[in-house]
Image: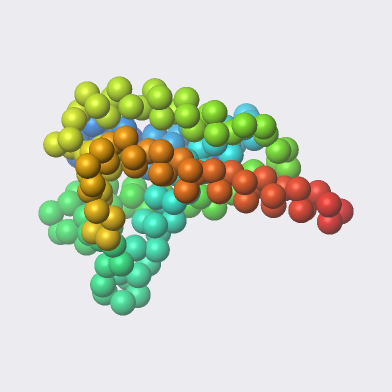
Length: 192
């Protein structure tokens, strides 16, 4: 699983640099699979949990939106509209399908390793701390990782959004995912 994610991530990054906008590499969904693949390869449960939790909500949301569009010909939130845009480069569309496997690979690898890391939220915080200067450098015109304004139509962009959104995401999305995945490890260990 680790090698698969690494190879597909490197292909995705190459295609972004070749056909897309180089700054797009800094979207979480475009570089986390590489980090996650390395974490899986080295069996590092801390980073597997941190990166899976960091990307979980975005990837699951993307997957649901994509499958909803395929099934009902309507977008749920519109995050996958580019996939159905004929002007968007086909190699980028194909490599975007990486979204579909990142979370399952992360969850499966974490469950197979069965090692509960302590304080994986620190890994998420470190990743975000390293990413923030890059996001700020590119500014709100690119809105990398939806930091400056909402990327989904039902979530309003409110004053102080760039401060409130990361805190909200950490508390409401990342922390529960870390807790639930650790709970799954605890429960699977108890059932033996």
